[in-house]
Length: 230
Image 1 (cartoon, rainbow, N blue to C red):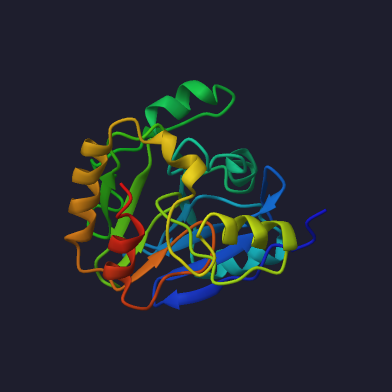
Image 2 (cartoon, one colour):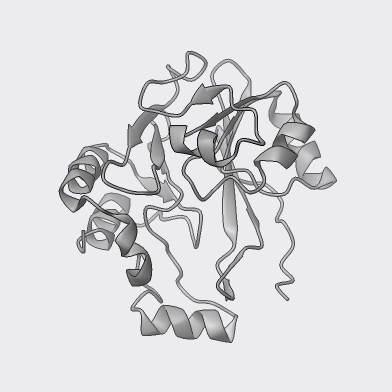
């Protein structure tokens, strides 16, 4: 059993924090990351929610009141209900298809490239066309940070033998890329490449990913190389 506990908040820019939690996929220990964004209004957006422990909640509450919870694609929604229970006044955002997939959740808005009025001045959003994941990524101009979920993964190393072996076998250990077995989610690669080109045109200097380490070294070129297969 995966024993990693939900991590404390780590501040990576003036208005952005991240926290990791255990996550297993097909027996692989890939963890998952939530991003906490303080908007210019002083309110808080939770991107890709993870289990919120009392300690984590205290840290989030110290930043500001949570007003938005974002499920960025069709995968990162497992802990949305817990986040809503913790923050009942928050608005839940997710792709249209997720609204149909999770009818047990009350969504307040469809996630798209049209920004919510609350974050219009803080975030730029780009939806990845041609992908079954229906992911929308966010760019935070003031800190030059790109916030993603399942665009790429970045595992420099791994302590779990099975996961480490899988990463090495698939050319992912120490390389920023997307798992070969998951590339089938891109049903229209031409459309996806156009979305990626728009992302790479942004002047970001770091990339937050859901699985693996935050990319900080030569971020734009690293992401470009990591998506060359597309």
